[in-house]
Image 1: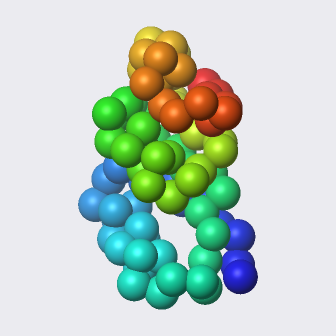
Image 2: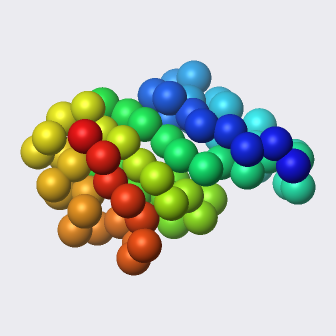
Length: 77
């Protein structure tokens, strides 16, 4: 299984990359995602894929994300 990081995971290309991961179960493990500031979507991605590392470009978004991501997820700015 390949471990991957998806940058811009909440944008159109990032969402398409996650669709590829969904379509090939057992081939990829998403270990981290990064986005600009779409807190709700990145929290959903962390929950769906069991992602433990999340990075957000916006500091305020990162603070909000820490409140809603699943327990055990590390949020970075």
